[in-house]
Amino acid sequence: EPEVTQTPSHQVTQMGQEVILRCVPISNHLYFYWYRQILGQKVEFLVSFYNNEISEKSEIFDDQFSVERPDGSNFTLKIRSTKLEDSAMYFCASSERTDSTNEKLFFGSGTQLSVL
Amino acid sequence: ILNVEQSPQSLHVQEGDSTNFTCSFPSSNFYALHWYRWETAKSPEALFVMTLNGDEKKKGRISATLNTKEGYSYLYIKGSQPEDSATYLCAPLNFGNEKLTFGTGTRLTIIP
Image (cartoon, rainbow over all chains, first blue to last red; front, side):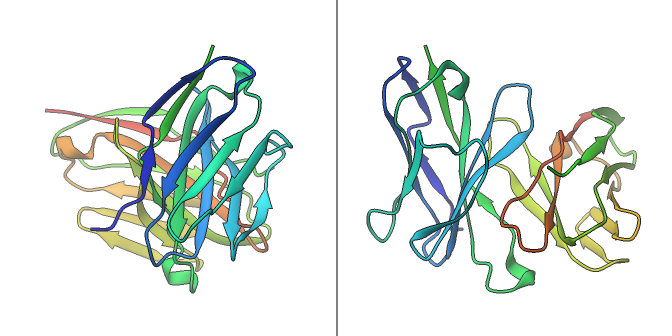
């Protein structure tokens, strides 16, 4: 069964460093997302991406964050200058979303980001 | 910001028993409700996407109902099995939005 893959599974970085989290969505999906979960808190939406541009972003997704689809398969999340509070599990997801019957999201297994 | 509440937060159920839990959400501007199962060390997996008031969906021993007028959904598990142990997340989607707003989840543990 097709799946969303994320790398790395765990990333440790120093505060102020840049990180890039990588995702390969399911190949025929059109919509891509990043969510995160800080330990003990709810899963939070960061950004959605469609047709090579951001379609919606949350207030968390400030100028330190960016997303890119550099080729036909990868979808990346970059954090330019990490802060301690960016430590979280980051999930990539993709969806077909051609109509309301197939809007479910397929999630990757996540990247645990630890900022020291 | 949508206020999404799930109850109970955690639940222990004897194997073979049936159980249910609740998701409540604002009924205004409703478009769809998603249910996901999230097993430890795995990725969240979609169970249902529901859009119509009165809708009922079923997948094996798991079913869900939706009341969009009063803003709640129930998830039912019949004859619980150890593999049902997981956190169950609900997330409504409003018209014109891309984002799912997740509840805190119900953590279900099945006792053999």
